Image (cartoon, rainbow, N blue to C red; front, side, top):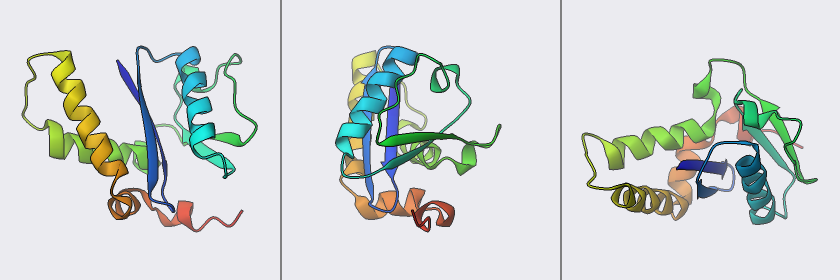
Length: 134
């Protein structure tokens, strides 16, 4: 199980998918989902150096461009701050009886964030992102 998430910091919106693997096929599926979810925008998505983010077989929708963040700098990626918040508020010092129970808590946390635009803006609204004038 892998969680793919994207956030629009200025809008205070996010979307996530829980998928069975982390690979080019799943990334392509996720990019299409993000493209459709934010179809009224031109999307600039920051990605890290994972191989499936840069595969020649990756299909990038026409309303999207991927930019690579600097190596070893997860702190500049807004989505990493979402994960920090989820770990702190939903997963600290917990053991789960099953994967289904963990996924239930994960979905609850993701939905809470998605339903709270101000919190999303606070966690992810870095000046170098929200002040970009395209």
